[in-house]
Amino acid sequence: MIHTDLVRLATTGSVDDGKSTLIGRMLFDTKQIFQDQLAAIEAASRQRGGDRVDLALLTDGLRAEREQGITIDVAYRYFATPKRKFILADTPGHVQYTRNMVTGASTADIALVLADARNGILEQTRRHAFIASLLRVPHLVLCVNKMDLVDYSEDVYEKIVDEFRDFAARLDINDLRFVPVSALEGDNVVEPSLNMSWYDGSPLLKIMEDIHVASDRNLIDARFPIQYVIRPHTAEHHDYRGYAGQIASGVFRPGDEVIALPSGFTTRIVEIDTYDGAIDEAPTPMSVVMRLEDNIDLSRGDMLSRPHNQPMVGQDIDAIVVWMSESVRLRPGAKYAIKHTTRWARAMVTDLQYRFDVTTLHRDESATSLGLNEIGRVRIRTTAPLFFDEYRRNRETGSFILVEEGTNNTVGAGMIGGPAE
Image 1 (cartoon, rainbow, N blue to C red):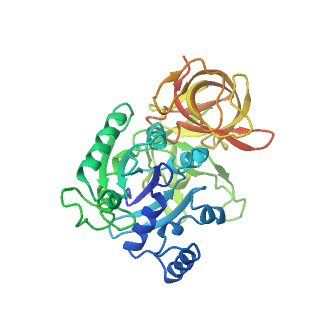
Image 2 (cartoon, rainbow, N blue to C red):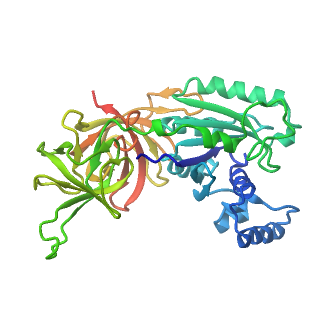
Image 3 (tube, one colour):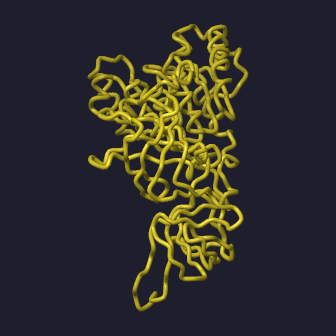
């Protein structure tokens, strides 16, 4: 049975559009806050001179965030309703923290893009929507927030919706929805708003509960990157050999024929084990241990797939890269470590094809480097073959990170666009 009741959300948008407040309101109105948490944020709100509870403090947990009133790092909160379980990622709105936003949105099923009703669609709103589309977040919801500050005007809302729809038409977005809200007052967040009778859609929580996410998972391309080889070496399990990892995509069953990459040997799955015992079916994203019919040579970084549905194998790839380093710039000729699924290799950037202007979506083909938070298309050559799919088809096997070897800092996140031509 494939469980679809866990949904990952990310709030995105410009500075002070109310992302943290929206999550705080959702937690508050659905009674997900413990009494001690409420007491703590009430006290913190009084210390800051506020005349009401600042719900943003539920997610802005760092001292610097509370002092400055901004979100710096990604904050995750667990949240549940009778229909679904959610993991909420509150991402920063400031340009200098775009890399944090990328981290928070990279695994999201739904991106909530906020816009302040007073300011409309800003450059950072466009940047975050563009990045969410690059990251292939399947569902985007534009939340026009702070409607209470524009007297709940339908005209203001419709103008912002039209502007965003025009911009989004140039992006690769599968599902786009709109909702007017006031996170501060609670309008259209959990309950329908009495102040916006002109809006005939659902409140945000119901939209989140009803969006169909099961079909977003790739259940066709069976991919199992090997994380660890298990050999207990005990008297009871002297002949046990299992391969542990998380299923990146597809579904595996005992009896399935599989091919081991890079060796090319074929075998069959004998048993699929979990902490709770053996199972008859293992869909993505389960973590399992597979036992095979033959003792073939497999180790960390290798992959199991179906013989007639294999990933691409190559050392030259084209990819979109979001640059995350403050200290170094991406330049052709630079060398890094690359981590793709469970496989590590060394890599060299052989070409920077262009840099995106995320506001106009223009491609600057004269660019010679990428700096912090800039996005470009590059060509990379690796020292060992990678087993990959295009990111638009498979987010798990189509993504990678670049690591600076001297410092071990993650300097770039990449989305594979296919084999290099």
